[in-house]
Length: 226
Image 1 (cartoon, rainbow, N blue to C red):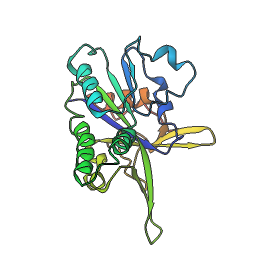
Image 2 (cartoon, rainbow, N blue to C red):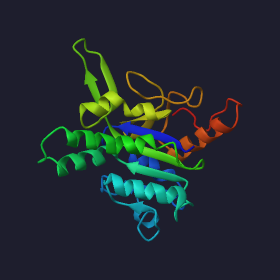
Image 3 (cartoon, rainbow, N blue to C red):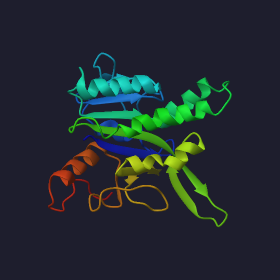
């Protein structure tokens, strides 16, 4: 049973930057946004020659990569990142914008839901990190709530966050980048007692803390409050 993490947040809130602490020898990044990474010297660590970086928003191609990592020639990979789920949905929508009828919306919904449905079914030592943009809605009474942004109402009804036990909300302010780990007018959540409410945006530390939490019951956490 693989480990799954969702990181959501606005553009520029530090989602991709959080990946800087991961080990490139055991990490594979699927760059669906096709914008590159966001720290100095990243091209030396992540590239096609190292077989740890691939640019695509095609769900079938992403699924193929995930299967290779799970049981194929990339089994040395311990962490795989999809950055972002939104671009997979947006590109599919734009490529099919001239199509009429309801079927295309069902197809687009199913393609993303297919990834999320299988996200826990890979090998035990694999962590799948999904990045997504967030959306904040305000009702008539002024109540604000932040959730993962989706394309179409069908995915809203399915609630993609339900497929994750850990949903982190990225936050950037005055050059400081953190993760919110528990719901505060949002769908952010994490295993009980694993994290403080706000932590540094360090993905390696997040994964280490989750592994420790799953393996013992001493009540300690690897990630300290920011």
